[in-house]
Length: 344
Ligand code: DP6
Image (cartoon, rainbow, N blue to C red; front, side, top):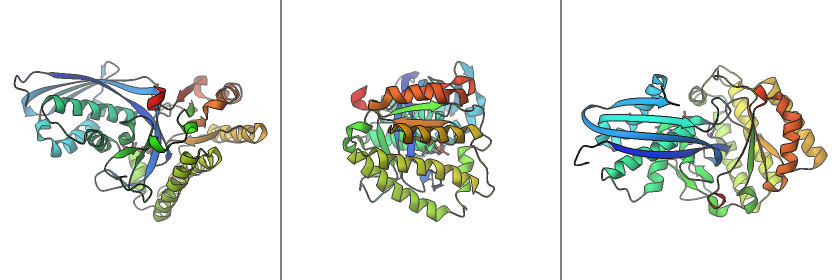
């Protein structure tokens, strides 16, 4: 315990990530129904200042987003802290001040829950460390903490390619936290680009949390788990071998399957926009005519993530800016790239 009961203040940041094999469906305490794999982004970050003031009263949280109080986030934050209190009862009491901001626009198709929960896990871990809670397994502990905040956040506590969930491919892979797989990645995937086409902003009609719940009694639940495990193997091989064609096949199958699962849920829904389908059609046409290695993925929303190797950056970005950008809300395109440790 901090002997002087002084306020402990830390500053952290964490990147968002984009999944190639998707986490869709959970079990138990925020454990994934299937393994998933993603890479972190370099421009899309959450920056956070967190202070903890020890005290005798039940834990109180104050949350500011971009300088303004945001009580709508309180239920998610309290539920996250309740989970952490099981392991760290010291967090039962006192006052937590969180001030958060993102380097990317809201509802732009970039997962802000991943970066914000990862930044908060980093901050809380640092605070606990300052209070004397040293953990020999720091990396996995932070990823596990982030997972309790938001599943996909556990893949945002370490830069580059991360795998979350048990799989026969790697024996140290775990449902509890994500592991880095950077050491087995072919160089072409160490600098992969992600241009995000912001087709439509605004609140999603159905949240990811509800989407995960609908997987519990989904008619294709077992088939989905099997497909994700198979796609994980295909992705793992493509990333190791530097095979962009195989990579593209997995990316697109996963993106379309995610949205097909939403449509075939009970009740069904869609987050796609007619423009999403039109830009996919144009992108495929460009790829077959120009023979350029380019592919796409989708998160839980209408905005398209266009993925391509560094070697084809110029051609792809030119095509996007001329032929796809007009489909974006307010012409918004965010050219981002992986945050791979050796690139930073
Ligand atoms: C479609 O991690 O946002 O982005 O665990 O309920 O917070 P919770 O869900 P969340 O789900 C993300 C799902 C996804 C795919 C992925 O990132 O793997």
